[in-house]
Length: 552
Image (tube, rainbow, N blue to C red):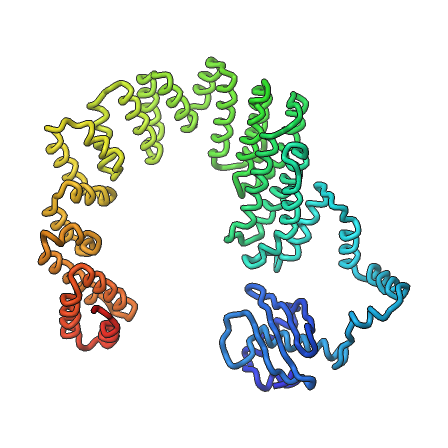
């Protein structure tokens, strides 16, 4: 097969696809690494590397592509590269000029003339040389932004950055992060913060047009957030009102950008990081007002959900707590009690102050407000337990522990057992187990209790009703009930075989036979296999899978 007669030897469908890739310009970085040994990148679902080896007359003597296509024919990527080679040879002649060798023979003036022509005629060359010659090892916000955008632009295909191109898209980000790694977190703190904010903003924009399944883009954002947090924490200079104002002014547009696009937790993290400075002076009022300004921004108000605003309100509450003005804190509780997080903080403060009756009152109010929210009801019940624990009210603690145990909460089952009087425990346990039988959610704890309490009759009865459970529970039953285990296990396997209608299902049934062998021995397993063969003689796929079993 020769470059000139591809269409004759390559299947029509593959040739047509390869021609389409070639005509769309998907063949990139075509190079002749050695005489008649060509290499190229072909853009597709992802980038594929292609190598083509030729004779001088264009005969193809070898080809390779990193795509998963397997055939004696060339794949569509190889076809595209062969067509590109043919075009290159047609334009440049069969014996292409060795450009590097020719350049080495030219005088300096001739080289400069060629370079000037390239700069004038090729914008990409002009841009490359501008970057190269202006690279002094320094980095400012504009340069960082350009580096990031250039590499991201190069990775875009049809307006999107595919999963396999995120590494290429992040080349500029990596350059910026490497530069930041070389800075001093104290002496260069402001520079670190400014450049890290650029990375966060650019990567947030990138997320909107990228497949970030690998989380590489998100990781770059969170690495930059950590750098900002460290720089603020180790800030060397004096932190006065002017410095705080300057930092808040710097962060404000970036937080708004994060709120508007809502791709990461960057807005929350940035606010949390700058709040560290409240320990360096009396800046509570500034921080409180700054957060209020964020909450009132159009970026926040345009949202149809309120969990971010709730988070910001908790930051304001933290500021008030740092100031220690209890009257202001109480007023805040009253104004924003519609937020569960605010009520929870109030309850925790009351617990710490041993105001247990107040906790119970707040829990009761919250359970009414959040009656339809199961997760929150769980939290309020936990806090009620702590209040009763502080009051020493054993009866109420037993009641709540019992309710939690019914939901499968092992921690509260242990509490329940420790709270109930030894003489009353058998009756309480019976009541608990009777209720747990009706609740699928409590199944793991229910079975665990049966095993712990050695209630093997009930465990066996459970397996009879749910034969699939025998596979996990047989170790606890085998010693006392070997025949019953055999009977239930056999019934389970027959049920699986009887329901099976394809090879995959037969294979699954055979895996259960392997576990049966581990439980009851090779002899019993072989006997069962023979029985199944006898019962289902007209299922060749089943018989084939059974024949593959090695049970000795």
